[in-house]
Image (cartoon, each protein chain N blue to C red):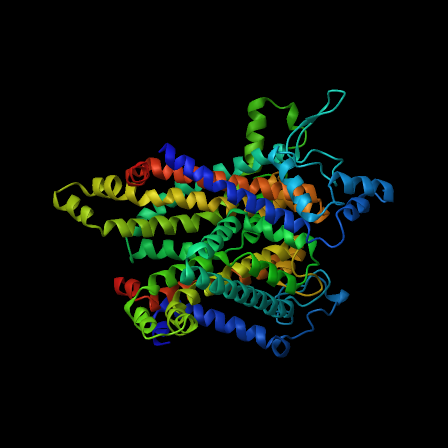
Length: 274
Length: 339
């Protein structure tokens, strides 16, 4: 934790993510209006003290919608990466620990998945499912586990023959003990870094899908679909397109800063270079 | 070198089979069978014609047989016909009995996407090299810091938002560039040169978007590669023997730092192809991404499967070319495999 606070990148990322998460968690208390309340008298009002980020084409308060949209974006990002990380750890651990044909099979599957353009794959699967945030989380998770798998496998392979692992193996430790007590805890740093960076790209993918109309569906607010609504009014209501884009930019940047900062802070090799 | 090539080609076979399996399984995720979607485009479709369709796609046979038959058709590059757009062939042109040629959908869309991606790759290299080198040479000083900030923004900026903003700024409020489609209305009357210019103008924004979003990663990569190389002993040697700094940086360091870039380009192909969905659908460019997006909206199965397979095959070919280029550029790899 100290290392994070001392690293300016990580600290900046942590603050950004912290503030946005708080806003998302307490959205029902902070939001000045009901995010779905349509008010035809207040259509397309520009930002003012009444409506911090203006109102949209149906007179809904954009700031309130942005707050609730934050919940969706963060939730989708975190759950999707959680799914991907769990799959990645399990497959990577099996491949890196047992090697042999299991390893070959798993790594071939990884190669196959990596050669299918990810966004095409996600869209193709979504075409056959009803778009809902749960399906989106699952689909993003199921299409983004390859990196973690490779990472965990590589860590396991390099740790597998270290003295401390060999020592406990000689003392008769079971495979499960080796995996969970020794190999996994020692591979946690790169896994955490890649998960944090993974959330950043999952947020981008979700907002892209919602922007294309294949993600979170109206009336549920998400940053991507607020932007899609705003697209039609771009000539006379800039705030509808500006704020969701900025929100995505800042959030993704926050996760990237945190991830890169953590990598620097937790990896003794790179932090010595600075 | 030949042995290396054969070995690489051999490994592509299981990958291709795996890709086809995944595309096939996705089609079978669909609730009900695909004749239901065909029927939804043409409500007059009778149960009899649906049965015919089932026979055509062998839906009445066991799944494993279906897969085998599909693989067989696929190996002759026969991807069938689109459901949604008047039975156009999905992949390549066909001639009917009267000698009319119908162009394949992918055949028409692929060159456009490839053109955009090649041009944006050139843009990326042109900008990322100087940015990365400057960043590495001024490590932790002002130019490096500002480039790093730019890189972080570049990583985080949603491409569709950037596209929308640029579209508004250059197309709507200033009217500098066309914002939709590939040609101006009536462009076919212009001279060949004017037509080319017109198309290039239409492609400027899509190329810019695709280039700017890819730029961050590559320039960071050049920077880190340069830093790595600059700290190696042979660079110290080169400096110690009194070579001018420019020779050291550009002849000794940059060349070696660029080597891994070949692999990175190979790896970035699926991202570029996938990323074309957003840019092409925003700017209404009739490329692979737009075709895929429309197919997804219409649940046009043959087109979806065709593009998934072709897109993946392109990725494999791209990776193969990258590996070969790497082996060609790096004698260690080349010699290592020919032994």
